[in-house]
Length: 241
Image (cartoon, rainbow, N blue to C red; front, side, top):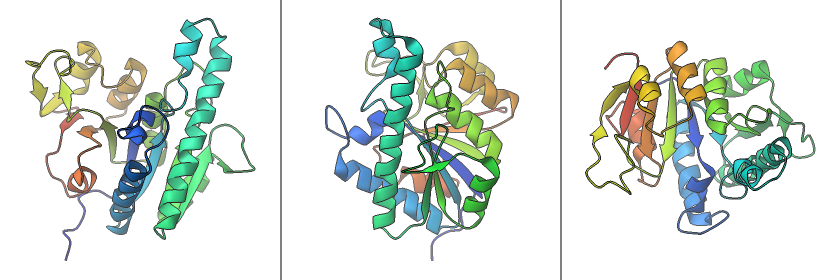
């Protein structure tokens, strides 16, 4: 018998790059299926689960904006990339027999629902997984900010951020092998230290609403379920250190 989960409701933030796996672009189906399998198990444990997915594996608006494209247009294109990833995740979850709804901050009604907070809450209460797409629906704001906002709106107990490293470091461990990994840090340390985990707007929102963040390596199998059981995985960002 599996241990009871330590959490009731969580929001998982997945970067678009997490879905690439070993591919240089797009979606690695084996990675998508593994992540979907863990999300399904998390939901089966009784944890009400929401997901915000990025779009960097397909299109990153900020990059083309720096190259000269209108920033608002570029960001809208990036939001549409997150819808593509959300639909892919929905398909993978449905193939596992899991109830799931994609809810978009932009109106794309032919393929998914509009994001309405009360409707999202009803889906979660009924055991359905909610995948929130298109960021906040506003340009200039990242999907990290969307994840923080949605987590606060739905009353999540924890924002889980899946990254390509196994926690928060004092510097980029890919560039500085001697960088220190933290097991726990405060929101203020995250905001003031410019540690590159998430943008400052998202971090400040979490701090001001006392929302803890758990940063872990999404490529590490089983990490998501260990977090749900209360294990010390990756780095915990909270108001207490």
